[in-house]
Image 1: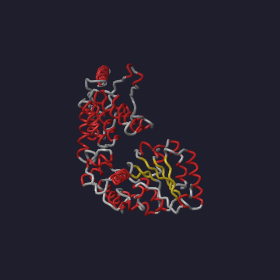
Image 2: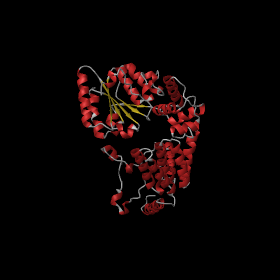
Image 3: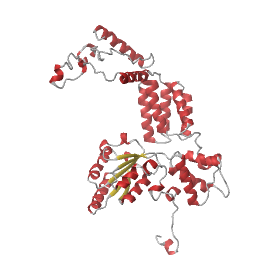
Image 4: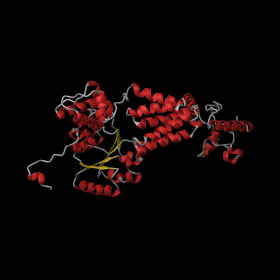
Length: 436
């Protein structure tokens, strides 16, 4: 079977996806990352210096992270090795490290590209450190998640983070022109449908080329699709707003205000509109967390837990299953008792800190680690609250020139009603014990 086609004189050329055909052959062809690859880009400067360090590529899918890693290996004459953190384990990594050290002995460097590097656990991430330090590998890790939260501090201290941006409309239009050149025919879309396709791609170059491929396949001779035809062919509706423009902010504002206004049905409507338009669910999830702390606060402390859990659930499940977790959090927050007392208290405290931030705390609550500080009265007279009745001393902890201030005013709703009772009780004890 292996030689059947060869013996018949036929060449086997398996069809390749358009995105693969148009993969850039040099760094100058990479679209949309001029801040990294332009004349004064961060990566351009590193290549020019002749010393490529380990890097973390952080950005959305389809922005060129894998392609740039491959091209960097070519530019710097490093042996390129690519693995995915989803499918690779310790045994495979050890083999790669041993091979890299073997190349190092004969003067050949290795660029190891790890896709989805955030999927590796902490111990696996630590395994990279020795081969990074001895120069056996130059590591490039790609991630769609915030490296500050997902990667070890030790790994981050040895690698520079490079942020990849979603492709803007101009960059996506360049990809469409390249596709037309490769296919030697114009894309069968009218002007509005062409703009709609770019919005559908959502900043993802690979997604844009996949859509283009679908359109080329579907079009009959002489047929040109309008926006409706595009939606039917692509089996998805064009987003009703550009996520970088007014509609994006209008709908997230509408969602926030309907949650604040305790209308779960209206909140679900605006949430569904954003999901349907292709909004990034994690962007929405982050805003729900913000709603939980800004508009619900301590009236229902569980709201923040629910909102964070929804964000983690989406991160674990992905679309579309994880969207239900965000919807559940929106309903919970819309139905929760509302209070902006913590939010208002924080802003008031921040204003005072900026105005009077140089004042020294009273010596009674400062430690005295040296004899001099002890002789100056640091810590003298401090009452350890746990040793006193009700675990409450009632001491005055404010700088003397300020006197006691009051920022936090809990509302008579939800859990803050209970907090208000506690504060009133402590105020009563404070007066009885002479704390002001």
